[in-house]
Length: 149
Image (tube, rainbow, N blue to C red):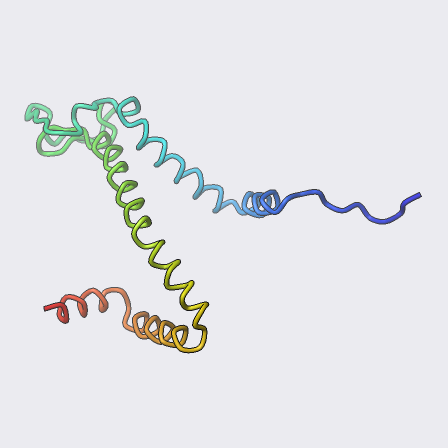
């Protein structure tokens, strides 16, 4: 008879999902992200006025306040703001994917070289990172603007 305690057969991803699902804020964040992604992908079918996403003008419905027909109201050209918001999710997602496609290979390459040449390059990159972070985000953009010319 075996009296040893049973070992958990849960995988690493199962453990990670268990920890993730125990945090209510994480689950709420996941729901919001999935809502944005699916509404962006299904925008033509989700939005009540798909024609309002492009060049559309209807001055007869300009500046309407939020109602059942226009959930977020209309803008000065009579376009539905809810429809334009859902279609804007597409641009945001595309921009995020493009930025990640550019930045991730650079980060992986720098991280790999930093690991290979641990003493010199790692210290140099760490020093540059600390110098960059010490100014704050708004200062860094201004510094880049002034020193770029």
